[in-house]
Structure formats: C-alpha cells, structure tokens
Length: 91
Image 1 (cartoon, rainbow, N blue to C red):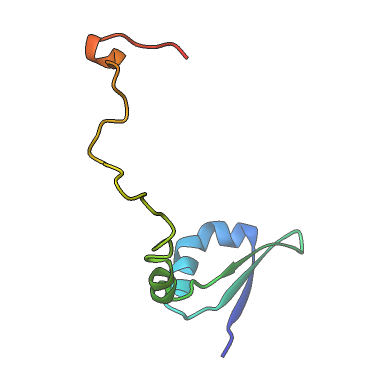
Image 2: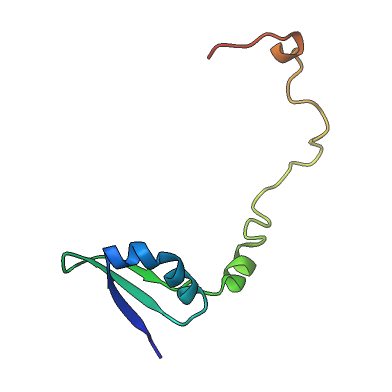
C-alpha cells in the first residue's frame, strides 16, 4: 500500500523530524511538499541499504594489477622531503 502525504512547506518545517521518522519506519512512502500550491519537493522513503552495500563491496576487485617484480616496499621518492627540515613549500 502506497501512502503519500501532501503538506505545505510551512507545515513541513514544523514537523520535519516526525516526517523523517515516519518515512524511515515505512509508515509513509512519499511526502509531497508544496509552497503556494505548487509542488517544490518530494521525499521518498529510503530503500534497504543491505543489497546496495553488498553490490558495492569489492566492485573494483580485479581492476588493478601490479606488474611482476614490482616492489611496493621501495620508497616512491628518493630525495629528502622538505618537511623533514621544517620547510613549507609554497605552491
């Protein structure tokens, strides 16, 4: 069952925290906010984040490769860094 509530921006300002709770608890599916009789915003209840997180976790797996023999423990810079001497660089 789809439950939609239409309210004015003035009323939303006064009741926004309660409306957020009702959306999160799936008591409302959508809230339409109007100003001077025109629709200015629409709030939708959040979807379950579980599937989205599972899809995102590991999505780059296999996209980076390290050439054989490349040593990740070797420092990238061999010159001394200015920070070691307390010198700030202006960029």
